Length: 279
Image (cartoon, rainbow, N blue to C red; front, side, top):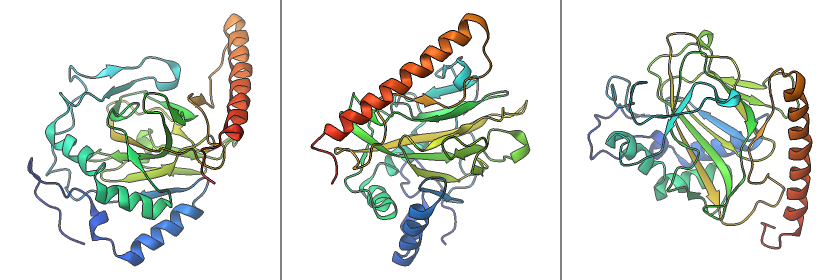
């Protein structure tokens, strides 16, 4: 392994995939394919620069360009995908994770051909969640209407200089329908998680973040022009946990669940009818 590099605005080699041998890539491909509860990779120390070398590049919680979410499912979450205000070193990270060498790496380890990055970072970009913040377990949208493309992979890169599991906010990978996560990933510095995105890839962090801590990450999504051979979802996010409700809200939630199940079944029928999906 090479030593961490000093980062300047011109530096492009943030990530260690360039150092991997053919045998290492083949090993990662097998690991991705057989991972449970769905295909994924957890690449620790994937980022070359240390927290000291990138100190201060991630915007603080009081940054004026954060957009905030207040709903139950994403309580305490802030995000930004505006490339006019995102700090240049982070834009360089975005660019490298969208470059042909990295796309070739993704294709090699996932077996998915023709991977396309999202130039708009819809749903992605910079993410920051603070004290008591959660991201309830869910499956993501599969079809991006803006791009007319099919979402195939998620990439999460954690930029927390220090993190302990006891602080909450750990990424959870769930088997659909299970009462507890199958795998938990601590979002520590330089850890990169890549996973297949479909209607089975339930993920999130349901344990609230402890007071005094802010969870910082980058999220990027990758697409293909052709739909996957198996049904992989539709244009909606499906939340797996809804919290306790009473009275009229309980009835409304029940109707929501029935309608989303019906929509999911209709999407499956549409998938079966599509002649352009992968063979």
